[in-house]
Length: 411
Length: 90
View (cartoon, rainbow over the protein chains, first blue to last red):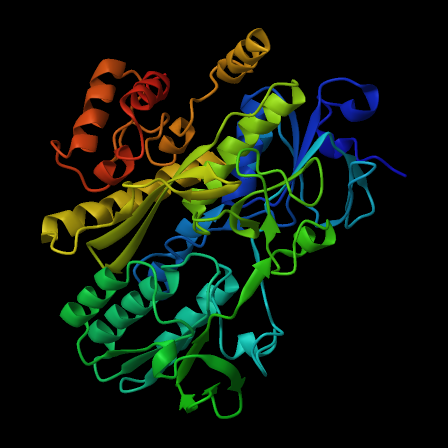
């Protein structure tokens, strides 16, 4: 078997084999993986990041791209700063994990040995969940839930729609990436329609009855987009079971809804390598120890970010970055034979309901019986009665958070 | 058994490497960048740890105006807040 020495950046020539400094391999170069690789390297460990794409396209703020409020270029990030930091970066897909031999196999057949492995593969969209909604259908009815070409496709569809058209947006049941994201998208699409195509309608079909920051979103919709945005919850027949591509319809148990633009956000699971590595359970997501983020199913393999089951912590970029830091410190301790302390993590998620109108949800998490739970008395959503200056400040902080989190992950 | 327990508690409290964050502290850097000084959200690098701890106390008590810091500060005790403040200003 060929060992990919080049990917180990020369500095750390196959140390796992040579009994030298321990090696950590990180699979996935998003907010979780890139942040974790950098934190591990800062702790003095030899790190290789495995990520097939040379450019990362960020999901947070991609809804503003869809609404025409932000250029796509501001969503794109590279890995140069990671290389400069001494992290080996292999632009390959990870195709296999041998947890007994502690080796990762890459698409080109090369093999990376590890002492500890971090999987941060994000989500995979379940193209088997909604009848008729497969990868080909996503070219007609974009999901735009992986940022990139799909984001631009949905943007183009909205731009091409005539005034007076109907946009249909479908939302899955929990859990999925970015719990408030579909409602931010609904808000910003409504903003685009109100300002550019005011005779149009937006129909939001939801597979659940309650959602993140619900009262804040609903108050904003009533104030900003009355008569334009119609929200249909599960109890109103909002659960979509399939699509009819030819008729541009989505299918529910109570009838079909046609749209000139149809945005289907399908159910999701952990990214493929999580399942290949044996870290995903029957839910499709990965149970982990809340202090170290080590897999409950596969030793020496850690899972962070959207792919892991983090209890009360949402699947957000902020959470992935926070988990990355805690996981990196835990791995550093484990490799030194030190105990891992009780975890405490934060999350803050901002959503824009319109330009200059931001809302947030925050949480503080601790381990309770092996699961991350909300700290009593902490966290919660922005006040319902906040003045406009408060909403403006939160919109500004959202932008600032994005600048900080992307600088931390990608330099 | 008592000495062994004491030793294990000591090990628990001891950082395994330089600069290790106390519980909860590393998450702060998700918004408070130590590298960016021009942000709307202030960097905490170089601030007086006693001042940061006092702010956390005021957010926790609801006596300082806040958007999100009141919701976060309520998740930590005075001792935890002081440990976070001492680390986050590095």
